[in-house]
Amino acid sequence: MAKPKIALYWAASCGGCDVAVLDTNEKILDIANIVDIVFWPIAIDFKYHHVEAMEDGSIDLCLFNGAVRNSEQEKIAKLLRAKSKVMVAFGACACFGGIPALANFTNRDEIFERAYLQAPSNANANNIFPQTLTNDNGYKLELPEFFDTVSTLAQVVDVDYFVPGCPPPVDIILKLVNLFATGQLPPVGSVIASDKSLCDECDRIKEDKKITNIYRPHEIFPDPEKCLLEQGIICCGPATRGGCGLRCIKVNMPCRGCFGPPPGIIDQGAKLVSAIASIYQGNEEDEIAMMVAEVLDPAGTFYRFGLADSMLKRKRLPQLQKEGIK
Amino acid sequence: MSFEPKIAGFLCNWCSYTGADLAGTSRKKYSPNVRVVRVMCSGRVDPTFILKAFDAGADGVLICGCHPGDCHYAEGNYKTARRISLLKKMLSQLGIEDERVRLEWVSASEGDRFASIVDDMTEKVRRLGPFSPNHGGNNG
Image (cartoon, rainbow over all chains, first blue to last red; front, side, top):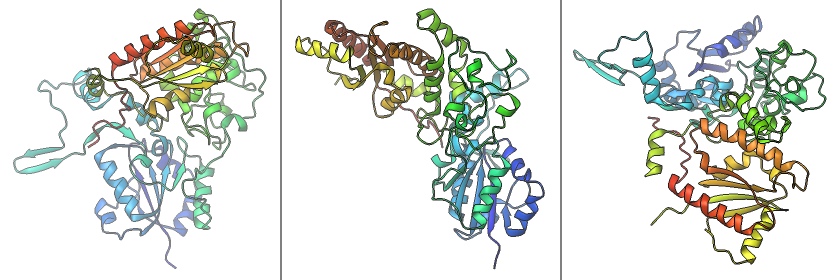
């Protein structure tokens, strides 16, 4: 029997998800024994035209990491979707936009302005910006088009399974491979992780959730036994899916939300606003103003990994706002 | 034709809904732009509801609860005050104008006040124009 074919791809990502696959250590050899890896840009020298030459549906499993931020990534996402039987959004960026989706607080014009004009190390007197097509002495040079908005994989193509995490932990990767190898994949649309919230799985001592100050992680030495929220540190546990193995909590750092919202929560940021505002003690106007000031960057903190997947998806674009005011 | 804003109104059962009812029974004239949803307490208004209202086509969201100290459930309205304040800071980072979300205290006897709040908010949102959910932008 022919071995199942696997493809791995990275779009707008840091490479950490690919490294997480290698973190399976010696088990990567077992994986390589039971499957054929037919496409993996970070590790194996196959080109796009090799994938284009394959028959539709001939790849059995595609692990796609990274968000979609330019036309090349969008094209390859569609190509791999057509060629793959099972498409997996692998990692926080593919699932929810991840760190790259923080660019949804700005847009293409602002990013180009900063990167090619304002940055102090630039010498760009002629205001040259990257072009999608350049003609130079009869040679055509092409670049992918840079998008205004970073999207999740599921906003671009149909996705069968979601493996969250920044990066996905090794035990979840092995669980996915095992489910795939034994033909026991859950219903399409499932998230391969826990169905509980992080707080449900956290073993810290939880007493009374009442705080009067909010601290940033570097401002205090938190007690390693007690709930971080109760110590005034913003921890995204109440609105984040569990299954991560409490990686951050175990090193005394608050949850930053990379597993996305648990079942039943539509918008991670809105729920965290609700959670933090509920436990803060103070009913007078000045106390409320103090709380608002202490949460320095609510959108960046509560949507750190999930802005592209949130209900608002991005900051409103200035040109559309102008049209609205007309 | 001038733009008629759609405003979602979450009104607490004990004070503000009764206040709006009083505005109606005393035949107050005010803008017909608010679609009222009765909730048992303004503390029931999860920030998700507000985002959902915008997602469903609202141009503004009005939340009304009992005056401080008057909450039927002792402190639901204080929780709301904290939630809406923090939510508004987050929404401003996402480019959503302050006037689109408004929290007001309206007692059961303040029919007049309810009517003038609705009139005032309707005019302010009308000036802002329609809420555009603005997904995507220029993506190829």
